[in-house]
Image (cartoon, rainbow, N blue to C red; front, side, top):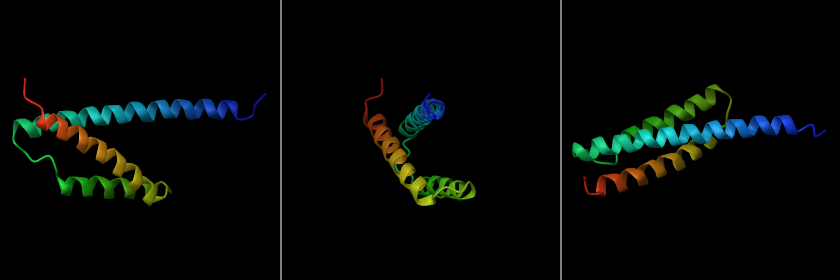
Length: 94
């Protein structure tokens, strides 16, 4: 029997949860983009981006995880959210 099998199954389950949570997060970002579009609020909100990155880095530190690692992950997440929001805001309203 492979001693890694059960651990890899657990990792696969966690990966599924992570992807689901990212999808949920992006859907909320899409809703935010609609509110921004409908209310003529600028897409870019630098203070919010800074807040999210610092908050998540601090949470990483609390849990003993490398803060730079989490900052890198959130840079990617925020970039994708901004890309999607830009598309939504620029799209014609139906």
